[in-house]
Length: 325
Ligand code: TXA
Ligand code: MG
Image (tube, rainbow, N blue to C red; front, top):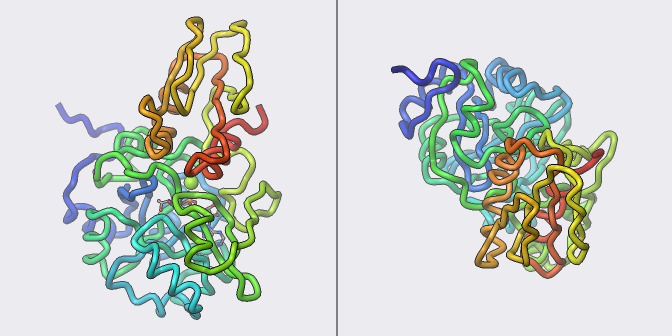
């Protein structure tokens, strides 16, 4: 029985992905952070289809994904020395650089902004795809706007209908949190979104601590900064590192980063039984989806302490999932 009538078909055939992309159709692609919904970044109609499929407002620009052979100078007017050093250190990997764009990048990609976000994803299938396309791929995370980010091909399939014909399946994402976004203001690095590269890593390469402007604003430099984002449908409440368990007055579930004595009256998810912060990051979105589908009236999430790797990125995602509840 055909099982792909309701949504995109899934497979690991780069030729099929390439063929749809070349014809201007959106394709789900794996990266090490989260799955992307990709289109030829140089084709405005193809990019428009991505905005439409995601129900994404046109003021929220897309990151352009490049491959090992991509001619960066054709997309970015300037490549400051600091940017080159960061590229050298972290590409392919979870770092997006905002750089002044050339006219080759259509305005729809950058939502009319003067900078374009560029990143080289660290996934073998997508790197191989990018070697073959001859064009870079504009790709937001492959979720409906505002909902939980996808870390498996099946998540992409659940989100879209036939306007997305194919999802390239590269397995579960190895990092599971979005890329860190960094740009320059008056020659100084500024972090706009927490993600897979930590402040300490950036500091080591730059030789100074970059400024951080990761705040929910009405007109954000990066709309991933919108207060409520990456969010479940179930109301979500945060618990501080040492806060007591809530009373079980509702049908509540709890997501814990690490193992701790468990209250019997709740549904409990532990992100990493073995205490591995990388596993916490990797499993967060998938577990949040599961909790969101469990028919709960509330989800509690324990925040992580400041010394845990990725604490800024993790607590930031937790916070945005909870905002306005
Ligand atoms: O890890 C990632 O970055 C994933 C994978 C697929 O690469 N992509 C991703 O895309 O998270 P998206 O669209 O969900 O989030 C990208 C964020 C948005 O908040 C967007 O506003 C910001 O990057 N952004 C993209 N281009 C920008 C630009 N030119 N100026 C300012 N912000 C930009
Ligand atoms: Mg996103």
